[in-house]
Amino acid sequence: DADVTQTPRNRITKTGKRIMLECSQTKGHDRMYWYRQDPGLGLRLIYYSFDVKDINKGEISDGYSVSRQAQAKFSLSLESAIPNQTALYFCATSDSKREDEKLFFGSGTQLSVL
Amino acid sequence: AQSVTQLDSQVPVFEEAPVELRCNYSSSVSVYLFWYVQYPNQGLQLLLKYLSGSTLVESINGFEAEFNKSQTSFHLRKPSVHISDTAEYFCAVSGNTGFQKLVFGTGTRLLVSP
Image 1 (cartoon, rainbow over the protein chains, first blue to last red):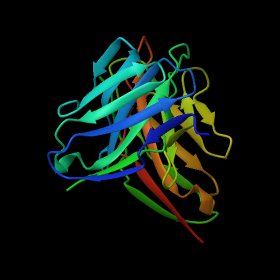
Image 2: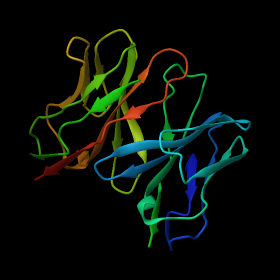
Image 3: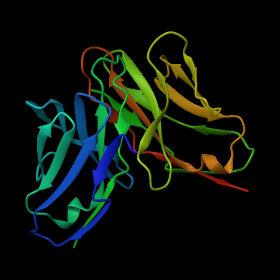
Image 4: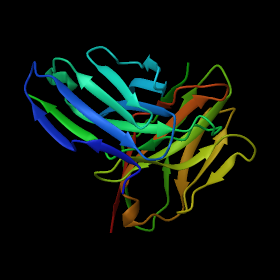
């Protein structure tokens, strides 16, 4: 079983709909992240969380919200989806006890907003 | 703040040929440097990293990268590539004190053909 699991793997939705992407992990890591990947732009950080009560905005948080329901679960919501939010979304985790903060990624969610 | 430049968006090579994927960074503080690899339809995984010490770091599958502070570079090399090395490669940088968000480059797609 994957250590970092994202659901769904693929989602097609319409403009204006509310969408939630879910992430769960079995690695026991305290830190969790949401990134989006766009061709030619690499990965950009949306939100990150140090623990259940510590959530921080990344570089592109507008139009997104997150919820850290438990140490192992971190969900990303698009309250009103728009076409330019079409992208590949990745959840990642890291262990604050590691010096290098190595990231462990899920397999991604491909979101298409029509 | 840190930034990463990967000038080559795509690098085509023949199997068993050598390859170099270029990465330059900028930072006002000392850094950690990473190469992540993304195989088709998968999330990113750490390939190798420089934290401190020897400036030449190696991965288990034959890649190596050298930290060059004067040229602010961390180029990735492999003397003989395989078809299975076809993937997208991301260079990333973070500051090395406290928590520092990882900043990714835009990625280089390595295409290995027979």
